[in-house]
Length: 434
Picture (spheres, rainbow, N blue to C red):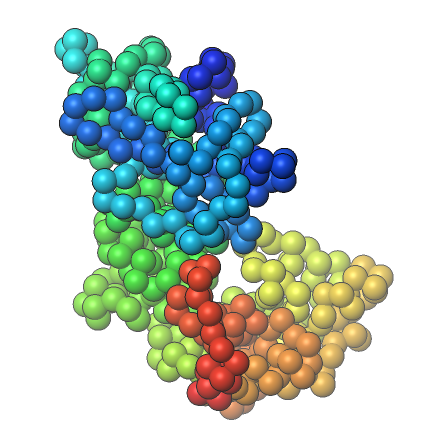
């Protein structure tokens, strides 16, 4: 995570947290064991806040706690610890504050009466061997324009004793710094971060994400988190986010809401998007219809390989769906004309761009029915080495497709996103067989 104060430098025993975040963590013999994800402090009513430890991200995005007493050296580009890390997943306690995730962008008041300031970075200082405290805050004055909007003012470096309200936010806390540091993260990684935040902070950050980014994150979160975040948004904003979600994920989320609230959101959505969601909501959860999306890649037999490749380049199409195109008779919007077959992208890449899809279509792949079970879908995916299965009605019209990631999501336990979650072979077999 890059600092918002690149011009500030580590000075002796003083380290700016914005520069520390993302730094490699090494054991005494020089092997890297992870990287700094955040710094943990305890903010008391009186006295300088104490630094109690680091949150270190190790393999598989697992975040663990390292007491500050086990940190022997902090220097540019490296944090040295005393030895092996406790690999138990970090769980934040009520008294603890994560500096990057929770303290950055917090608004506090200057004790001299000069107004509000927003925290942009924090300097931690070593007082005794293996004992650190928060010494100074790099802040930005918050002023209001004639229209009442808050805007940035001058920046300054102040001690913690010069501000009040450090332990609590004045109004809704901005999330600009945290969102900026997660800009290049995959949606699944950002979802993992949100899950680890206190509930109020999670909602603040989620509400400030762009619609498309929030939609991607909601698709990666467990249902209870997604429902909580969506329910906290204003109805029009929630409908806008649902509009850009994959229809199957939006339908799953809507099914968790109270019927009256779900109907209200459907009425606020774009008519075409709402219609796709309504169609999916009629199917049972553990069926092909309950898992399918209505927006796979669909092309006619007289389209060319060049047109197919142009379609699958669309970054909004999930990779599992982009690996296979469905060929049908017109119309091409679901429900389509009669299903013909599929084109495997790997095969299309070996053909001249002007090749007609009808000449290379694979007609041996059997489409599934919306009432088919998860076990039936699993066998089809495995038998034909597919990343997606077309779904057709009784007349052979394509209704959508089920991707392998949605099948896996259904087979794994609800808490599979938790790094400590495990599932036995017997449990997996039970899920496959329903």
